[in-house]
Image (cartoon, rainbow, N blue to C red):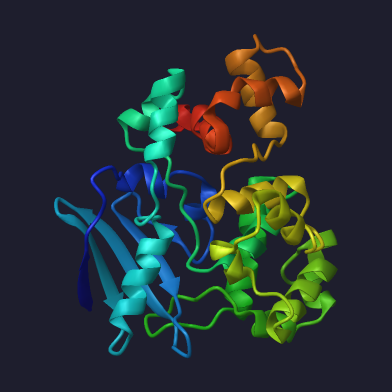
Amino acid sequence: MFKLEIGTPARFSYRYTVRSHGWYDLAPFEIDADDRLLFVTRRGTNEEPVAVAVEATKGGLVASVDASAFDRDSVMRDVRHILRLDEEFDGFYAAITRTGRVVWAREKNAGRLLRGPTVWEDLVKTMCTTNCSWSLTRSMVTNLVDKLGDETACGRRAFPTAEAMASRREAFYRDEMRAGYRSPYLVELAERVASGELDPETWLDSELSTAELKKEMKTVKGVGDYAAENLLKLVGRYDGLALDSWLRSQFYERHNGGKKCSDKKIDMYYHNFGNFRGLAIWCDMTESWFD
């Protein structure tokens, strides 16, 4: 077991990042009962997958790697990426000060949304969140990882590559992954990425406007406005609210006396957060998770 020390920004919370949304509950992520260790299975370019356990310490983070040979720099880079350590949130905190809303996020250094080591992983998982319960999302992702993910030396499995997914036909996704209507979409997506026609990793540093990038994301069958706006948050763009039935219902209860209202009214409530309004509504609606 090799241990790597990783520094963190002054305004960083391990707990509020790991628990920021449900990704910690989806394979190959795993978190221990005490929220102390986040288990990550990642792979570098032309590398075998390795298991990494990330733990917060007084000085930052320690990443324990269960492998005899690995690329130290790529592991550290992936951990920094997953926990958003190099992303700047001063603009978000300034908007909180200006509006006087979602104050808890500034006080707790919240706002960083956990993400996978690759945009590819986040894209597939996001497709598995649409039009279904969280338990079904978790089941689909677990089936996918268990059946197609490469095994590490310690027995954990990595998220499957596009090539591995493209090697399976639609019946696999329907019958074994239990992906339902998503099955042909997942086949097409895997084939596009495996062939090089589509490279989701470029979305991280894309020079496209947010509207143009959202349009590109929606060329993936199965990715609509909700999924695209969630993906945008995971690549660092927070313009969209990514409204779904859960967010709407939470807003109605919290800010509209339990009565339904238009999406336009919801958007106007967070209007003064500017490009951070999508992050503002998410932090606003998840504050109770940490009570």
